[in-house]
Image (cartoon, rainbow, N blue to C red; front, top):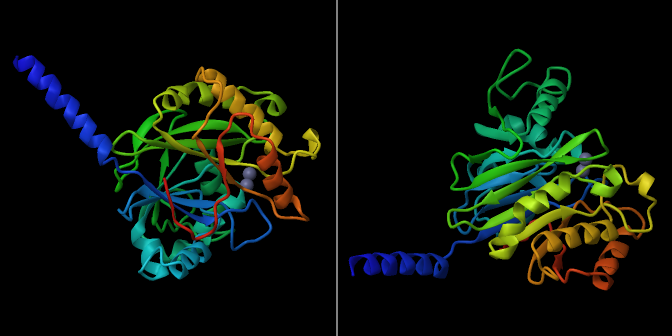
Length: 316
Ligand SMILES: [Zn+2]
Ligand SMILES: [Zn+2]
């Protein structure tokens, strides 16, 4: 009898958890992959209403925070949001459009961790937080060491906690113009829901790697149990661009191809209800319009394609 009671209590505990499941707040601070220096890849992710964010890349910080304040997403001033609400950074790779906002704002920032795979940390340490390029606001490298940021090198696929938040993370290596590397991060909240964010990446077929396939295999259980709330992944060019001119990026056709691999790994005929947030659009001509039209016309896995707006809160 006692055993049944225990099982019943455990069961109702989980039901309650689900009823009151906390979800994510996602605030895009920058959405483009070039062109407009006031709007480059950076997304604040945190548990709903907590104001404890991890910044997924940091191409643009201040202009995005100002936009969010204009939109009444934040009531505080930009300095306070930067210093107190952003608890840590994840930097996917060493390209400027993913980290220049962090470098430029470093003199005003508070002490926090930078989480990344070792190859990205080495670029920050040897190329940017140097006396030649700026000043060393991190904790290793050129003297004087100002120590605002602490490098946290993580192993591929190692699970770890994002300090000062209730988020867990796991980083995966990506190929971005093979052999140049980038990375993705799986963020999990306190009730086991996840968001998967990709830094720049090419398709496996074009890059001649299996980096994406490995991630699809790893996350397919989250598709089956419906705990993956969204994927943020890039589309830099429209599908008419020649594959040899993609420079480690995706097009609508290539992302659709990859999403079909994910559906297959999850043993599902489609990925209905999965939110796919398109990042890193490259401005130029009518390319962005073409990409949006392509996604309206071509969606073999029936996902929900979403185009984020700078400074607009998304609740996931
Ligand atoms: Zn980029
Ligand atoms: Zn890049």
